[in-house]
Image 1 (tube, rainbow, N blue to C red):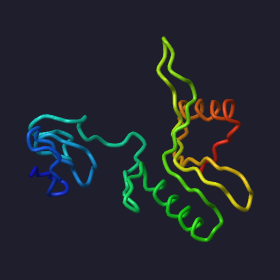
Image 2: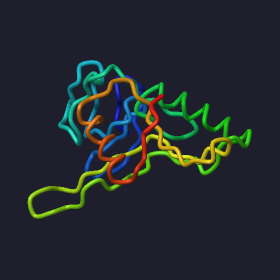
Image 3: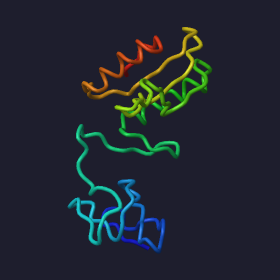
Length: 155
């Protein structure tokens, strides 16, 4: 069993490859992880842990990992709305193809944080728990509207 200096233990994934899963950071590491310094003791299975670019903190809620605390809280709110029969068909991390793969370019996707059907408004909703609007996001939002006629709701 690997030892992670943040969580104290790490779940064994593969003994032969010496791979472990850090419980705090959610990263797969090879050897012993030093989460505080961002370095691994005996090599890496992924890039070293580093501070998130937009200060988001990965959060686990309802057994699922979310990219930010804001996204996890919004998921909880949507679960309550679904339980109150105000929305239905709640899904997370839904992929939309924006541009198919070609000879020159890779396929382009938009991954929605949440999709659901709003029973009051009688409409399909694509929602993004947004903290920082990057140029990439703005371009994908425009592409979603142009291709599917969907205006992404930001919360």
